[in-house]
Amino acid sequence: MLDVRVYRAALAPALIALFVAAFSLADRPAAVTTPFAPAGFDGGRAYTLLGELGEAYPNRAPGSATDRALVQHARAIGETPEGLLTEVEGTAFRTGEHRFFLDPRDPLGTGFVLR
Image (cartoon, rainbow, N blue to C red; front, side, top):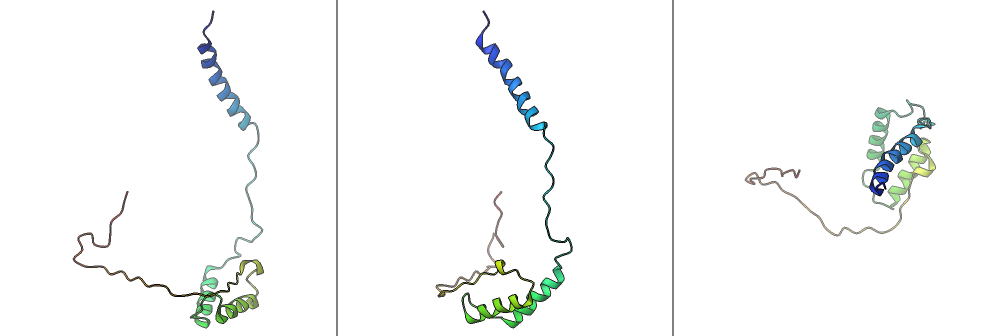
C-alpha cells in the first residue's frame, strides 16, 4: 500500500502549477491614464504664482479673514478646482515654542544615523 505522504508531496507541485497557470491566462490590464494633458502643469508658473500669493498674504492664520481672502483670490484666478480648496474655521492658540541649538563641542556633531 502507498504512503499518504507521497500523495501530498505530488499534490503540492500540481497546485503550484495550477496557480501559476490560472494567473497567466489573462492578458495584462491596460495602463491607467489621466485626463490631464502631459504639459498641463508648469512648475515655473506655479512657483511664480505661489510667490505672488505669499507676498500678498504673508501672515495668515487658519480660519482668519486673511485666509478666507486668499481662498477667494485663488478661486478668482480660475485655475483651482472648487473641490481642492479647504476652508478652516476655529481658534488657534500658541502653546509653546521649541528652539534647537547645535553645540560645536558636541562629539556627535549634527547627529547620527540609525541603520
